[in-house]
Image (tube, rainbow, N blue to C red; front, side, top):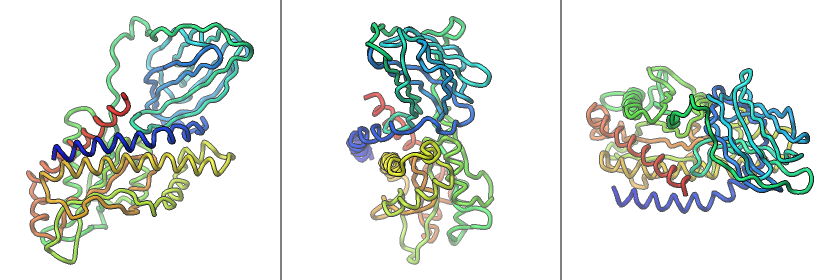
Length: 396
């Protein structure tokens, strides 16, 4: 298992390195009218650049819109982020064109004030979603000099007021756990039970494992025997701002001797279906670029989906590496398909077939509470592996 985990980590570094440049270049085209998610928080503020052009980046845990009330012509930029909470005032000395900046709360919005060394102009604003090892949103503001380059200011660390010097708690990752089938949809039938009951029991065990350490916010698509439409499950994940989505299932086959675990990620053939699905869910790429160039939207969509599929594939391999100690793996255990629950282009997602209800050994393992719990604990370990790896990639 350790050898397989090491191989997965090395492969992921190569995948992410190959996609990072293209993705960041394409995502820079995202306009800033991305619909803000409720309760977005400011995580920090960063600056870079020189006296000709300076970039200020606001790190956010959700998407946000921006509204400019002063554009820099008078030596000051003022921008509000409706629905965003700055928690406590942040302020800092500047860099390049920026002399000083401050962000605080005002009338239900985070209000950013940037004092410039001279007249300036906002050259561009855009929102970058989580991508390629960066686990949060970034609202980017590029300011250019309106005349000759101004004197360059040296950046100093941002400072909080004395009352707010406590170290912030790390942001919890959002993991959506989807128990397959439910209610009027029983799923596969075994000799002793139905798939919908096995998936729910496994999902609750995985929820307990993830919440135990306090590192994750777990969102369940169902916590009881109810029917949830497939598209609704994806919408739950997207509205929760999910960092990861795992759908739990149990397989069935005509040959009762067939057994083993397998994992599905989104197939290439399903890409067009994903685009149609997202347009119905008012995905940010469509809303943010409404009225813009369709070709740009298509490129942006493709870049984001490609990065997401790479991360999904990495997670799938980590899951198989951990599951191998608890259940036999089906031959060709990593597969692809166009399942609806895998269609969100901005949420890494897998569908885990835990075993076969039609095989007596697999069914016995899945119905046994102790074995099922140990199996789900290993999936929790794979989720830990995934976010550890993403953090390492982000730090490079």
